[in-house]
Image (cartoon, rainbow, N blue to C red; front, side):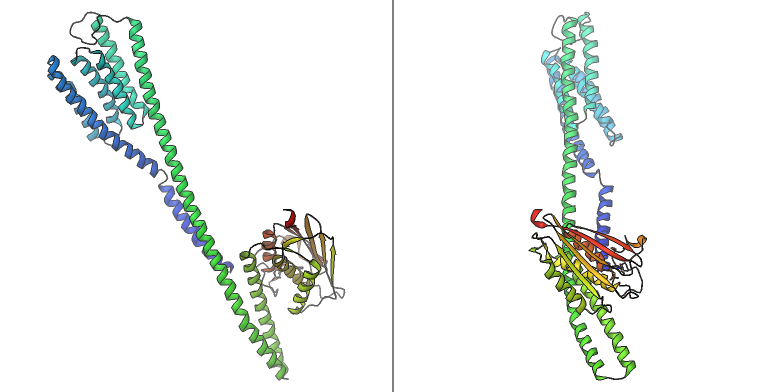
Length: 453
Ligand code: ADP
């Protein structure tokens, strides 16, 4: 049972790890894919805009005969942009060149239209287009080009240099110029901020969607694991159950054969067979208990402890322990109604009592097993004590492990106390052991009263 569980769990964990590794490798994949998509889409947009500015420049050549300027400046801009893009496609250099180009096209169009006021707005169109890359730094080349252009051309025009064509105005005072620059910088700043926030928002959004995807996968894997475990439990339960029937008929045949013979060696061999069959049956019963505890729902029921304990003791004695303690005493204190899961409490008591009987000190003639139950509104405190062989201190925390037996020759499966611990956990209770070798042991179990949970 344990090994089968382990194997399934191992396989699932291994698959999970594989999935995790894959995910780890590709952890930034969605963000990288997103950035690639942004880049491609923005590059396409930039193609349209730069080509449009170039064509507009040529078209504006008609007004003041500035074809050569349009071809020369516009052509140089496109040449720089596409060369950088072809030579360094993975770098962002060409995007920064595009940003500077937008500033240069603004200057060119202002010039071509002899300083037409409205042409200055083209800088803002450029700034807005650049948001598409979601990179605030791309605002910088444009801003720098515009500021340098405005400062130099403004200064030259207002100093009286002819044919500068920066503005249609005859004069601009420094204060007005500074306000212009300040307003332009504000727009560049706002566009940069948007670009930054867009990128941050998109990344967060992608990370969130990715996390949701991971959680969904984990949830599916958990469901699968639960399904596999429950199928395995069902399988183990039915196999164990079916195994008991042939064992019982084997026991019957051995008993009949023993009755029919008087030969001592045969009787001895048959007795050994009986003990082996009983041991195997005990092992199967343990597996059934384990499976029952793992599978069954919590069933609330009023527990009548005297009745339950009498039944368990009868069952334990009937199961044929080689030891037969002279005394098994039951004390139940408290009149409170106690509600819990009867089948799990039966499993717990069954194992603790049969252990107390099994691990008696055969050298004593006053062997005893005492069962004390104290009921309260809050809980039931059960103490199963004996004056048996006891358990060494250093081994007391191991006895609840699966398949652990203090003595390798023990007839038990080593599952009993493990099942007890599991069942106590299902009841949200606790279990403790006090024991001294040669003096005896006591197992203290506390189980909450479900009524008041
Ligand atoms: P087993 O099937 O071997 O009894 P358990 O899980 O029930 O397995 O117990 C684990 C070990 O703890 C036993 O092998 C035994 O050595 C020790 N043990 C359990 N109960 C007692 C007890 N009442 N007195 C002495 N030893 C005990």
